[in-house]
Image (cartoon, rainbow, N blue to C red; front, side, top):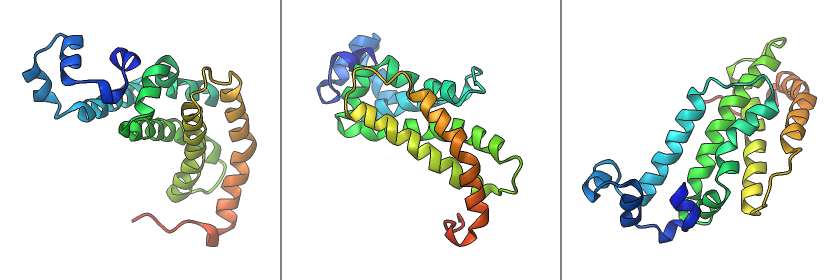
Length: 181
């Protein structure tokens, strides 16, 4: 991330990486095929850290902040990744992180209802895509700071609408997406 903060992705070379990490070229190629494979590994490592973290909160807003900490703490590096062909790595990271934390809140909200796994999947992805879309917009617009009220607004919107989304899913079976195979 330090190297990405200083240089755009297309300007980073294997030589830059091995000098920054103080390793030799063979070590780099033992683990990574190229710079994009290193980028994928970095984001996969961040997902593992997010998944394995024991800092989970009962607050949707705090979980959102935990999911986007990588982005908030590395604005310039993330901007460089977003402007490159590797921008999908950011999207994959956000989608995975959002699905992980949103599903916990959806399952809790669904406890009073007879909502099956397909319903959990649908509602989780409905909110996850909203979270990812808002965050990607923040990155794309290269906003210098995140709206400090955004996490609370997202949380408020979730709590204000989740019961209705679940009830509509149960009430209108003809509007449900096809069963996952």
